[in-house]
Image 1 (cartoon, rainbow, N blue to C red):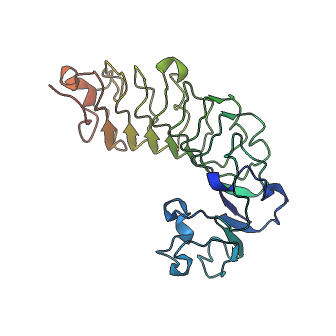
Image 2: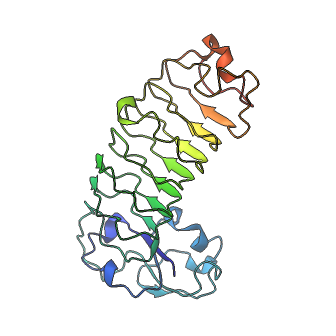
Length: 274
């Protein structure tokens, strides 16, 4: 079974909902903004969930039955919840069957090795807009099924070890420095497709796996690119067919000074040429 959790600041710190004791069926916790509702239950797919609900309501199983045929509850800002509920400062205890976790715009400040140690079914984590400044290096090590990890808009200065099956990683709008991102941090992520590292303070481009199609590095402090940054300087016949979008705009590097650095790409990177 699959459990979807969307944790909104107005619903935490789990004083009114004990997630770990929920019956192991499908749960969708929805807050009033439909922008953060999982696509499978967006109003455009199932109009009966519009306008957003204000209490705990049963959901008809016809909502995307191929994904969650027995969705039990959807929860929003219920009228019976406490008037003052503090925002989360730590990852709550989750049901072990959880597959998708959305805990956007809370006040989580640290991810420990214990937070996800027993939630090995997770496929997607979205922690956008928290206050995370530290992630212990083994925090995601047991998440062998994790495909999407969103850590955008936090306060990270370095990255932990990342799971090998990631297809999308977003760390835009942090404070990442090159010394906090190991040169081979992404090299072994052979299924990685989307890599977003814009609006940080990186000084160099990390090693990019061959599988990557889109990489965003805009608004960093990158000052140089070489023939080995994206291509293979020792092989003039080398072609990189997967990489179709590179953003380097907002960096000090003048791309026109390194024309041989992009010969393997289908299109030139976005950036400063004069």
